[in-house]
Image 1 (cartoon, one colour):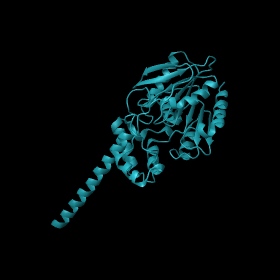
Image 2 (cartoon, one colour):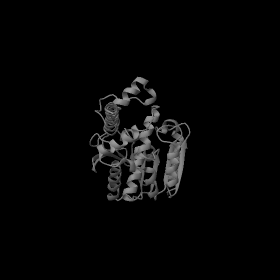
Image 3 (cartoon, helix red, strand yellow):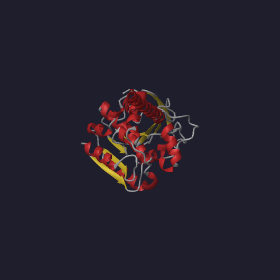
Image 4 (cartoon, rainbow, N blue to C red):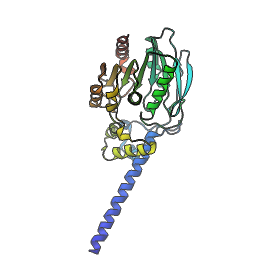
Length: 316
């Protein structure tokens, strides 16, 4: 009997140690996923470029995400605007003398407003002003934190409110990936009704986008993805399992252009279809057969420009 108790105690200690180690690893991953490192640090390569040894090392230490910095300025005259939201955010306003309205442009995870200048040029050519926004933790904005679209939604609202207060009537919200998610949450939280939404590759739920990171490394998502999402919520003080763009979609009342790359490894076709099906307002889905989770202008410049142009012309 005494020997059995000793064995049970050893098993309990072993399982407890495993539980603690797994949670510590998840905690570290969650922190690095939601907090950028110094801008001069070296970024961890994408999973498909890592050796198995490096993948194993990354599994235990987490990825290194240098703080995104703006690498270029607009070639057109522009105004730098700093807005106070839940964090201080920096924006660039580029005006078109014959503007039909203003497109507010929001970058994705690990991005910055200068990475969206090529798309701003497209909207300017279509006779729109553009307001490019750095989310918190990026570019000229405050901090080193990111919440994958959750707290960023308030920054979408702040940028929207800035233009409304300036008297702008025709506002289009454009976002890619995390930017699209932040837009959808802002619409959900504040009942925004812009002239239109243009959404590139938003994920369906916070859990699914985290699980995709493990799938891309050919590693099982369970239980680490659940723990990573949980600890990310604890660290950033929100309940991440309720961060579901697929649910936010039900509150959209404006016309929507939803865009998706069919080779996307971070967002599934099913997630995209679920979001699309939950939108009850006028909508269109544009897909690009050979594009992944990337800037669609790289492979589909003409198609993307045409899709955007036709969609916006339909609003007039």
